[in-house]
Image 1 (tube, helix red, strand yellow):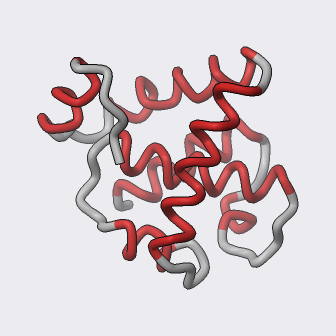
Image 2: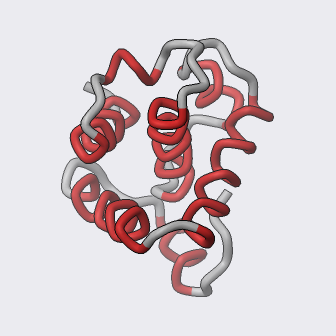
Length: 116
């Protein structure tokens, strides 16, 4: 199991959807948001895949889709209910135990800079 798969399992467990729904072309909010949270966490946790690789992993999308997905999560966090924010904040802690965090990401988080 690779790091992206570990993120997908935790995100799908939290959102109540099957992992197969992350890869379909549907724009249904619950599927798209879960897919975007996976992209967001992949970059926030400092995983090695590039934006192009992340986009390609999620149904053959490109890097601009990954950037848009990450930005959508930032926007959703700032404009929606606190329950969503709590869930998204807890996910990295649940995933951290499976792999090491990139030191650059930790520095960015310490400095309160956006991690993209």
